[in-house]
Image (cartoon, helix red, strand yellow):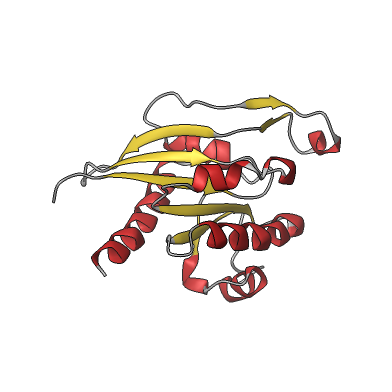
Amino acid sequence: MEPQTFKVVVAGPFASGKTTFIASAADGDIIGSENAISDSTKALKQTTTTAMDHATIELAGSGDHVGLFGTPGQERFSFMWPVLAQGMHGYLILIDASRLQARAQSRSIVRAFASFAPQAPMLIAANRWDPEALPRAELAEFIGIDPSLIVSCDPRDKDQCHETVENLLRSIRVGESA
């Protein structure tokens, strides 16, 4: 099979690990738009994405190339979401599963992206997730998705990031062959 090029959007609530995911997965430098935080959210972190993060990766074995496009997580920058969603093959919603507010925000993000691209495959990549404390079925019901769409992913771990992208690409390929 000939190597392909895919566009994958990485979305999620503020401080969920999207920039870290893209930086960990990247084969080289990332292009980003990190700016200092000027409101009360700086208690969580010092900078935030205001437009997008971007990196490319080549997946071992298949030789496929993936362009990763990270969205801003703050609601005030949500106007970028449909712009970045144009032409995407699929998307990941990265959430910090340890934060109730992040889990709640993920519901509206899932709905928003489903409206931009209803046919695009999606996965929830749960960061800081303890499946014993918060079972997969409970997390899925809270977000409003099928439990099979949730994978655990530490955005600091390159191998886990690549595995998560490969899981999404399997869904994309199934959709293309249907």
